[in-house]
Length: 444
Ligand SMILES: Cc1cc2nc3c(=O)[nH]c(=O)nc-3n(C[C@H](O)[C@H](O)[C@H](O)COP(=O)(O)O)c2cc1C
Image (cartoon, rainbow, N blue to C red; front, side):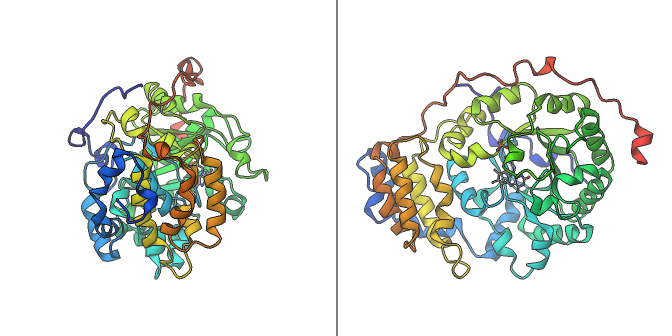
């Protein structure tokens, strides 16, 4: 197993706020969790704590906000690994699961449109509330209206997200087609700089941009550098997350836009070389902790993983704390995770009338047994159970019988290794160095 180049402890970590230069200012009471292994017996000792857990996971909004305040300036693990923002995927339910598996991963919310926040200002908890355990957590917002971006950031401020990220990479027609929004914004760096300045002026948190390496024919390395240069020189943005493929706004689907345009990691590493004062997180096509560590060894400040972290949460996130952060193994099992998730889930189901449903809450669990014995049967049982189950408890009772005890009770094994290092020769492939035409660019 590969370990991180340096191990860390919370106390020795530089606070994120100084890393990113800042601007102006268990055991459940039913049988499915009573497996035969010793780890189950161990978790029995916590059987009386479910109400406490519920309290810890979901407290009242006021208590939550005050609790969040105390977390914002805490010392966090460095953002070496983050889970990408993914609409309809990285919701509160998924993030709750992710945090139960990895204590160190940075978690991004799904994109929230500034307009949603502004128009739902009397209903903000539904969109912005999260449990304190989810720190470090980054809110991603999207939009093209400075006033709404300002207002949305201001409205989100009491929730004390650890960073505010602005979406300049989404190619979805629902987003990109509506004027200048998402990936299209890369064509208007001046606006992005204005937006970032406005966002930064309404939060105490650091701000960052997530973008592609280009859009349509505007895909040269120099154009990407011009974008980074203008945004970073005209706004407080010091952190860029680079989805290392361009966006095609020609009508192909968002999913195709995450596979058809080729990955060009050499552009990412070119940015590291040409903008040494900025911080860059690499994203796109990175699926294993080995690849994450390889990207970091090649120089990336951070690595963001999207689909793999959702589709195979156990096999991806399960290795993050040990193989990337050098922490000792927690020995946690999926049974223990599900026990806690049930407590969360039963507090969440129906919180807003008929929503969320058991299906909504349980969806992130569907990849938990990826490639394990019983996975197919469990998914079929889950599909059937979604039709009538109204509690997570009954959902688990009905479905988890498909998963053998040894699967539920094993801690994560060693990460599989031996794949090709996609970054092995990256420094021999870099594009020619960027030469900014400073005056020309500043007034463009
Ligand atoms: C279902 C889905 C929804 C996504 N929604 C967002 C989003 O809200 N904001 C964003 O910046 N990127 C979004 N993305 C893109 C991811 O953040 C990430 O950039 C992309 O999946 C590439 O990373 P990966 O290869 O590790 O999956 C989404 C991706 C998926 C699969």
